[in-house]
Structures are given as structure tokens and as C-alpha cells.
Image (tube, rainbow, N blue to C red; front, side, top):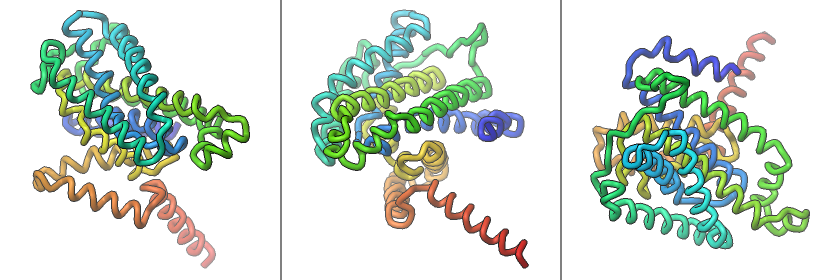
Length: 311
């Protein structure tokens, strides 16, 4: 509740459309990483193809509203149905693989989607993409400003945050953790490992699809570079840097890796090296991600405060 109140108060202090748009992107990517964190942090399955699911949601919603003039609500639902079907078809065979093989399979899927998006020029606009995608209209109000969209995106995030938190503290969440620990042990305890892995893969894909649709109706433009392989890797980095198996890590990771590129423009093509050093630092010194760093800092501050009161 404190977090929600703090977030919704930000537009009273931040008036710049530029900074509000960055906060909107942080919200969208935080939603995406909530789903990916379920798959990676709790189920222990690596996916390098979630940028493709983000793109499927974005492109489906954009195409249906621009080319076929369908209502945005209908486009959202169709995008979810298509994403669910593709995630099931990809998840069933891919999730029989483990470790690097699973990562390679999802990476290949992401590359195939990107090739299709570039090739289907009549629908997707090819490498150039397409624009004039309509803004979302909610309760008669068109979300045509950064401030309006900010409130909408972060409201969606809070809903997903609550649902995700309830899920990971439920019996399903405990089953996911057992799969992460040992699939053999989980199966011995009666967990349907194969079915649950496919279900969480589909769920995380659906979350990515929703955030993709939110993205495209904010930017009102989409091209294949928006959801390429590098974007999939960036999503994984957000989960790892923020802290796997921690819902708050999704916000921290998304915030850092959304804001950071704005300050790395001076490095031009060398920004990937900076990302590499950040990831290396996190893995070596903060394996629990930024959430672990925040917890350590708060613990030290609390201990310092206790010492001060004792003296």
C-alpha cells in the first residue's frame, strides 16, 4: 500500500513528459519481468525468447486495431489467445529440455519470430514497422498523455503484483519452488512437473503479451527491433539484476536497466560492455540481485541506529 501510494504521488512532483514516459516504460517492463521471474526465479526454467511473446502481444494488438479496426479490448483478448496457443506449442517440446538446451531452444524461437516479423511486410511493415496505432480509451477517457498512461500502467502492475504474490505463496508457488530445487523430488511428492512447467511458461508468456500490448498503445509504433533477441536478453538481465525469486526485484531490475541506457548514449555501441560489467558484478558480489543489496544496506542502517540508541 505504501509503495502504491508513493508511485501514484510521483506525477505531482514529476511534471516532465520525458521522465513520466520513462516511468511508464519501467512499469511496462516490471510487468513483463513479473511473469519471467515466475518462470526463471521460481520454476528455475531459462527463457531467452520472452521478447518474442512481448512482440506477439504488441504486433497482434497493433495489427488488429490499425488494419482491421477492431476495438482495443478485443485486440488484447485475441493477442492473449494467440500467445497462449503459441506458448503451449513451444512450451510442450521445449520444456523437456534443461539448462543451456532450453535457453537455446527459446532463443531459436525468438529469432524465428523476428524473421517472420521482418518478412511479413504487408501485415507488419517489415523492418520499418508501422505506426498510427490508437491510444487506449478507458471509461470514455483517451489515455493520450504520459500522466494518464502512467496511472493506468502502474495500476495494471499493482494488480499483477498482487496476483503474483498470492500465487507464489500458494500451493502452486511451493510446487514451483520444489521443481526449481529438484524435479525428481517434486515428482516424488506428487507434483505434475511437466504440466506445471508448461502452465507457468504459458502464464509468463501471457504476462509478456499484456505488457507488449500496453507498450504498443503507448508508443503508437512498433518494429521488429522492439522485440528482438537483445530485448529478450535485456529482460533476463532485469530479472537477474533485480533478484530472482523476488517480486520486488522485478521493479528494481526494470528501473535500473530502463534508466541506465539514457545515460549510456555517450558510449554508443559500447553500452553492451557496460551491461556485461553490471551483470558480472551482480553475479559475483550480489547473487541475490539488487534486492539483496538493499536488504544488506537496510540491515546495516538498522544496526547502526541500534548502536546509536544504546550509547
